[in-house]
Image (cartoon, rainbow, N blue to C red; front, side, top):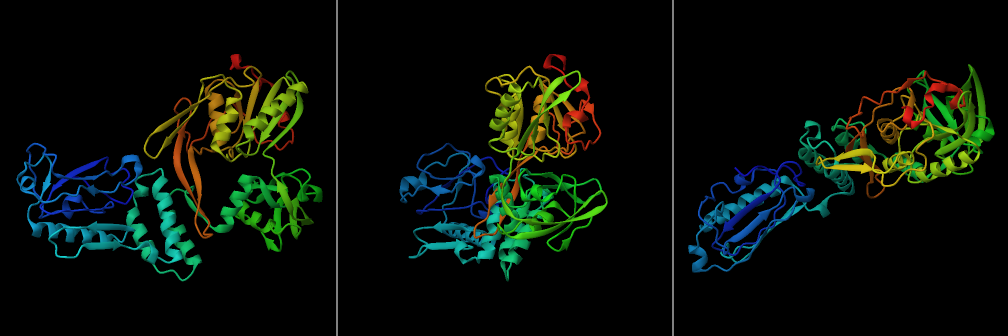
Amino acid sequence: QHGEVRHHTCTSYIPYYRMRLQLTQSLTVLLCCLDVPIARAFSGAIKRSSAGRDERHVNMMLEGCKNNRCQMVTTDRTSPSASALSSTPAKGDIISTNQNALQEVGGQVLSFLSSLGVACAIMMTINGFGSASTVANAADYGSLTDEQKAVAEAWRIVDNSFLDRKFNGQDWFALRQDAVRAKYKSSTDAQDAIEKMVGKLGDKYTRYLPPAKYQSLVNSATGTLAGVGIELNIGKDGRVIASDVEGDSPASNGGIRPRDIFVEVDGQRFEKGATPDEVANRLRGPEGSKVGVVMERDGKSLDFILTRAKIKVSSVKTYLSDKAGVGKVGVIRIKSFSGTTASTVSDAIAELKKKGAKAFVIDLRNNPGGLLPGGVETAGLFLDANKPVVFVVNKNGIVDAQETLAPGIDLDDPVVLYVNGNTASASEVMTAALKENGRVTVAGEQTFGKGIVQTIRELSNNYGGVAVTIARYETPKHNDINKQGIPVDISVPECENDDAVSCLPANAFKAPQEI
């Protein structure tokens, strides 16, 4: 009759609970959320009244979804008195004046909680149950093994923040129970269980990250790696290629070029179907160690011996070009977005203008995204104040409308955004913001279509981490581009020329008032 609390965070099932108990004995109850209907826990021990409220009643509140956290139930502690026993119950009160009924309530609640096996305690102190108080602990967290704790921690991270509150139709709480109760022989078994559990959510972006993969992502985010300085991607034939080579890196100094195809790394061959992560794991190693690499270029195999070094990843590259009918064009290639991208691009614009740039190309090809704020702030460099940039919608449907706060540094020069099918996520946020505000021309190929946002959380005890989809976003015109992408204004076939400007037609360069 009162609804149902499904799992321990109580998200998306009940907005609020208020129940009152009038008791003949002193009662203190602490409850976590139950995976049973509340009314069932008190069946046979309750009745309702429609009379007016009396403040002397014992009050019990269970606040389920407030702030997405389950609040504890507390009761006032009152001494039995004649006035309390004869007071008029308030509307909606749950009333019991029978000690056997009270004992039944306590027994059923204890039974339900202990059957759940959650890390949650119930404490009942009722004068008249005998001389002893009843204290029960449900699934003492301290009794779990390290492997079981890792599984429980991963479940909790996903449960707290995952965007799809239906959990892909899974009984998410039951999955937790089964996974935590399982016996694991090793940390590898626990990692496999986490991967399997998270995989049931049906979201390829919500995934378990083993320790090596998690550390790789951390290194990428901080911009410091021990490797050879190659950016990896999948080529047209499905093989892993060097999509870019860092300047003054072991790879660059050794002679590896963009678009070279990986054949073998450190003795392991890579065929069609291999992933960039697999190749990257072989390329990385201790600083100063050597790695053998076999690359294919124009149908020929080339052997390289490279010495691994600390690599400082530069996410922004710039150069000056020329276009007939346009003049000098500043090219800014953004490989991914970080917290410093906007300031770096701002400096690049100023420097290119000093060199005579009258128009700009922002090359976002093969940019997988990165940090969302980086894309938002970089878009703001080209927009006037109070322009919508993106609407971020979280798991509760709450919309965070992000807009520019001040005028950008370039509001008038022609700007072309150059994109392709691997332009995704934060780079699509920037693309949509500038396109729908009428600031740029978008050229190239339709973008990837990733309109959701992830966060990465570390697991304790070196168990890696978990990437979780926590929000989705809408463009300034409230378009949802997830799995659809952003159409271009001018279609440009794939171009392998190192100068992006040479790939673009002159009519792509339009001042904002001409768009």
